[in-house]
Length: 231
Image (cartoon, rainbow, N blue to C red; front, side, top):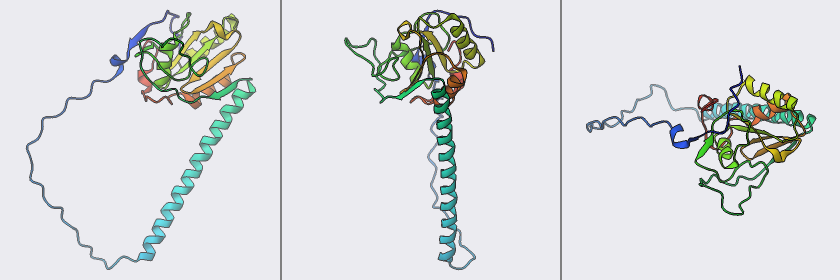
């Protein structure tokens, strides 16, 4: 996929992203409610031992499925952690600071991480895209709330590394926002809702691992087709 052109920051009102609810159908005329009919069984009394056996089998199957799901999730998490660790990234999870909407941050307000992973934000989010100028936290935090990822790099990151990030973005830009953040210096930061990976550079395996583990995990569930470049 060809990367979309680098552009300056654009924002879009959240209200425009909320689908218009379907119009309610006209209220039907009241209908007489009939009492349900009870079907009589042609069999004799149910054997309680058989019931217990069936219930036991169902519980056992559910338990096995739960264990398998747990193993898959744990293995995926370990795999992501291993890839990020191998790339020298520091991974942190922060408590959610909430999702309040504000026009501007109160004087002295500080997010509990840098870059932020949750907290107060504007009703407008940044259009999903790749930028040549920093994106205000007031907007990018809203992107995280929608389940997207924000990738930011410092002013000492080489042009070659920026090209690598751009090429990675172009492979699948869904729910991705990429922008410079000068204060990061030589580091590259990956953020999702309450999640931060701070890396000494760009590593594609680490980037894929972070994306696969955290994308679409924001508190607001938006479908992938609404998290495309320019939206």
